[in-house]
Amino acid sequence: MTVATTDASNSGDRKVAVVTGASSGIGAATAKVLAAQGYHVVIGARRVDRIDELAAEIDGTAIVLDVTDEQSVAAFVEQIPAVDVLVNNAGGAKGLATVAEADLDDWRWMWETNVLGTLRITKALLPKLIDSGDGLIVTISSIAAIEAYDNGAGYTTAKHAQAVLHRTLRPELLGKPVRLTEIQPGMVETEFSLVRFEGDAEKADKVYEGLTPLSADDVAEVIGFVASRPPHVNLDTILLMPRDQASARRNIKTG
Ligand code: 8X3
Image (cartoon, rainbow, N blue to C red; front, side):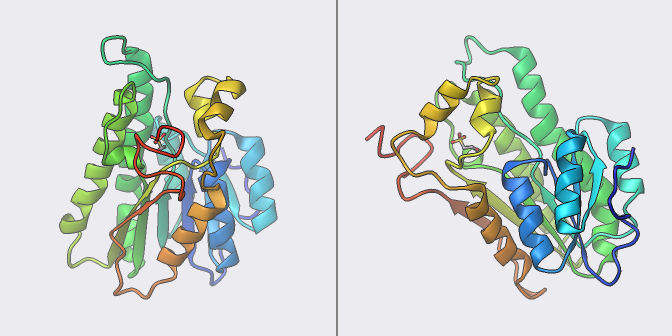
């Protein structure tokens, strides 16, 4: 189903950027930055009402997208005739539990959204990215893609897997006109923790209390910088954390 304010096939002479999971947080902020750089941004997300509003604001196109659903991805891609930039942002965490107490449904959700979701949309758009003659794939992994932490294995394993999928494309696409950038954010105040704690705002707020986290805009600005490099420059991996954080396990609160 299309809920487009403008049509994806009607981008004029603007380059096209697709951002997944763009209804809030890093995805929404990235859509705004890329639109300000002159891209026609196709924003995909499950929450139709939110993306419709954002599309109108940035003169982009909103198309409903569930990256865990093969048919939804196929219908989404069908409506996009050409694409220059893909930002794989859809994903997230559910729960914080030891391996001993792992919730299989939470793990399934995390692997479906972060790993298979990235695979589905990347695979489907890859021919169009190559055809663009100057494609760019930005995958938002996480500091959890390079570090494991207690109670986080469902998420850290999914982020490691998503990142390895992304990194494998780099040599596989050598010789093709597609750049690949992995963005590894640390603590960013978005709905991330709210989703992880199933809507428990008090718990979510505690994560960022007593330190200054990154904002979604901080991360989006970096993605804007990546997208505005000339075609021969490939920024491979960018790890960004607030000054108050030293690693996934250490910040000014943990000491
Ligand atoms: C989010 C960062 O440290 O909560 O990707 O895993 S962390």
